[in-house]
Amino acid sequence: MFKKVTFIASSLLISISCSPQKQEKISNPLETILTSDAPKIKRVMDNLEQHEVQIRYTQIDREDNQVSFTNFDFQVDSSTYFYPASTVKFPTAVVALSRLNQMDSLNLNTRFYVEGDSIETTFSEVITQIFAISDNDANNRLIEFLGQDTINSVLKRKGVSPVRIWQRLGNNDDNTTTKPLIIYENDSTVRMLSKHINTYPKPLELKNIRKGEGFYDEDSLMSEPFDFSLKNYYPIEAQDALLKQIIFPENFTPKERFNLGEEQRAVLLNAMHTVPRKAGYDPHIYPDGYCKFFMYGDTKDTIPDSIEIYNKVGFAYGTLTDCAYIKDTENNIEFMITATLLVNENGIFNDNTYEYEEVGIPFLAELGRQLYVYELSRKH
Image (cartoon, rainbow, N blue to C red; front, side):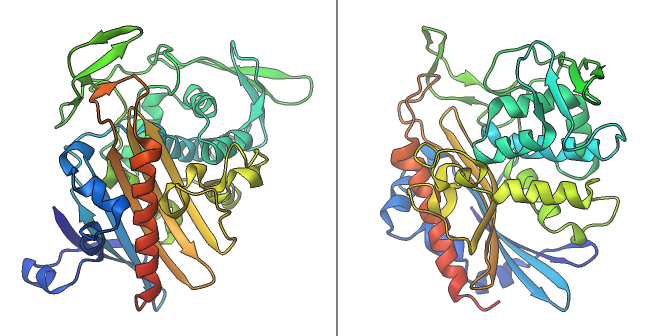
């Protein structure tokens, strides 16, 4: 279940596999933490099959202008399905910014609205909403702008795979056809961006693609597993790959990098680590840990300015996921974690009875805290 992989990165990311003999001699901090007696971790690990845990922890070291990544994996397997929920908003935002950089007539501050929608916004505002409070409508506006075929093809071309983004989030609209965007070119001139007709996907064929004992279809309980085969697919490996490309673009060749200008990347990074109160949201409704599961998800604490968490969370259908780059500027440490787990004790989906607050978020928060403590003691 536990695996260790090392990457050395300069201008190009190079994979170096450790031999089994060497792996046995190197202590695995992730294994140590997961087998500890910490109650918030132990209650998940004691029911491992039920919770479908997958984790990748990445150590980051720097020397002579080179960055090295050492991955420690627990049950990471792209052939075993988990529902990615709102984590798919991260790649959608990246592709949208990349597309903007190719269009002379549009920029971050261009105002627009979706046909049939009463909300006017800008691309910059949408990006902020996606990361600060994981706003579904903001994400769906970018889906209308891009179309799913464009999102998937750009991600694949940049090496972020496997991935399949198909469904909008939070509504049951037809996913095949996007809606036109109405663009304000100036105070008095508008134009329409045409709709996209996207390729209907094939059902996913993966382990655990059918989950649970039953599900609600509106008010009716169906006594059969819930089928996720036409849902979004964004496994740990792909989430980790995208995060590394955005945080460390210099480690990749120009062909591998996303087409982001300096301003666009700055807006993206700022949105990724800005907590809700700094984006204008009520901290009593959206505390700092609302979309920062690691370390702070189970608290109402204010995150210190010295702790920067660049991440995207997802929570739906009982599945909690967080993909994060954590940086402590005061103690000069940095590391990455991508983790997911299922908290659906009764095995019924769509009943809104999930153990997010009781089990899932405390597990991820404690995992983050223990890895942070380990990083404080690790020689970099």
